[in-house]
Image (tube, rainbow, N blue to C red; front, side, top):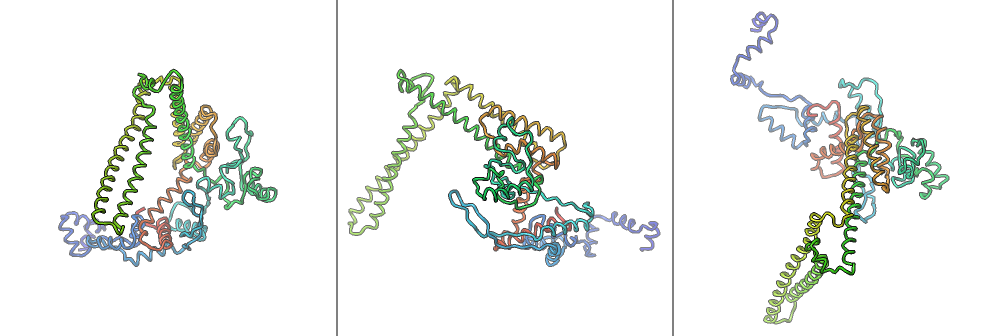
Length: 522
């Protein structure tokens, strides 16, 4: 039969056999394969481990999946082979997990305390990186044979200052990337023509001078460029990423608080206006209430509500006393049954009356307080010229902050992403930042310029222009993404009771998932 196929097909017997099988019906073909026991689907060794990491399964769930797939003719590697593949992926890593002392911030007024917490790490990191690159080469990745490893530092600004020994954002020289002062940040017209950039060498020199000449006294930090401790790492300053996420959050909060402060000033002006109307000798409270322009706005409604609230509190105290007397009556000895019953019934009646009175007082309080808000809104809608000077002021405030938030949103959308940026996009971002800062300085002349605003103005564009990506690519947004990935990887290990072993298992899963040898679900 094979010889006939060979002759008929001209040496392509396999193609002829495929054509013959196509002529057989699907159901008949499946019956034939079942009889020959070749209808099973075989998942190659190593793919199940990739599915375990990609889907987020533990070994217990993997056993259930294996049994379920076996019912449908899908066979795969055993758990022993899966564990062996996982161990082979981790042979080059020296993974440690232990409890280490960490400083933990307390809640509200509680002080910071030292607490042992689980920590897992790979040692040494350089060996793990080179092993990864070698595996990339073995897997025929596009990395090539020679490598240049560049390390970037990223995090929130407080952490970056801690790493590089600065006293923080409140110092006289608060910027990590340049030696600008607070006064120069606020006034662009009164700053040096060239602001020197900070380097690892300049930080070291300033810290040495602080330790010797300044005697390590924090009060002298401003005289030594706020370099109060040695840098923890030797990552160059130009490879420290600008914290774009914290810039956005910090500046949005600052603009919101400015808006809140301006609206509070409007409230105070309106309050002063109403008080001045009452304080004039020719106008009485009754006349003000009867004024058609004021409608039925009861200016004493809040005072009445407070008085009712105090009365309700007093009734609640009496109610608690009655409940205490009832409890005492139950446990008291020497009281006649008849007398006890009479006292008990009287106390119950008093409690019910007090509860009803408290409910009525609470309803009255709600009515009075809602009256103030409702009536005041109606007055401002019906009489926009009350008082005349507040209307243009409120309109101006609304327009100013609408424009501020609009300009800032253009800046945020320009840098807060992880995509590549060409020179045109960078120039548009530079223009948007300059427009925002000019509008801010013009319309908020008394506003401060914090270090986050200085970073936006002077360092965001140079950083993006050098590395060609938005700040989200290598900034703290990338770190938050890694954090989210670790949280996802930790879900299958949540059943491990020991927190140290749980964290080590999570790190193992991560290292298997990023290995170039990993196959299966990406």
